[in-house]
Length: 327
Image (cartoon, rainbow, N blue to C red; front, side, top):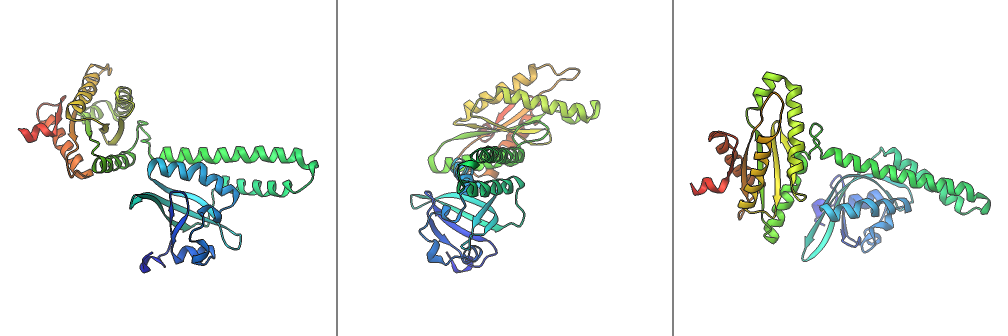
């Protein structure tokens, strides 16, 4: 590691895709109480208890290989003196010279998730009981069941926290944070493998009138019902999210301009034909499709310009950004 990274106020470690430690900074060495030569070339799990090895396998590896990153994972290492060291871990999986590596930043944490504490206590009891005679079998079985139950509870809590962090609480759709993470991932795939996709920005026409006329509770109901309708119309691979206010967004994978406009038109027509009670709802949509050199800002900017064109042309219509360029 570069010299300036050796003493930054967090531990840094780089491991191979198989978990072998490739590089570690001095801060992490001091935290764990090891010399550099004692860790380099060893498996990262050699610094973990049995319980944390299990947690690492069931959560960290699958998640980072699926999503390319792990954010704010509560975890524990075991120091050279066999003490538990609670940490907050952030990791990213990256390719370098044709190989994948996992780079992690590690902050010491003084507070532990209560479920994790209970699991460690239960595991300690199990390790002690395994050394005793057969008379402890009945108690050992009960503790083993408790350990498994708490492990499942911890995994469920982590899943719920992850879902909550990426879900819009009003509509139940994915939220802006999740959408932006996925947009960056799709742009990266486009730059590397030339996999095109399209982006939709969807806006409710005259939404302020609904809030002013019927009140915000009705406005919230409109947003919720529209979200359910859009999700029901989306293809399995499409990502529909709430962007903010009355705006929704959708990523349409493997879709050129014509396909994306077709999807957008199906959204628009369904909303126009739906029964909304005392009021009527229409939507305007702006569409952009990936082009060379695209970034998050350029794709959103073109789709937003196309949305403005839909609004300016009378609303309740779909406009693709490419048609504006041609015009």
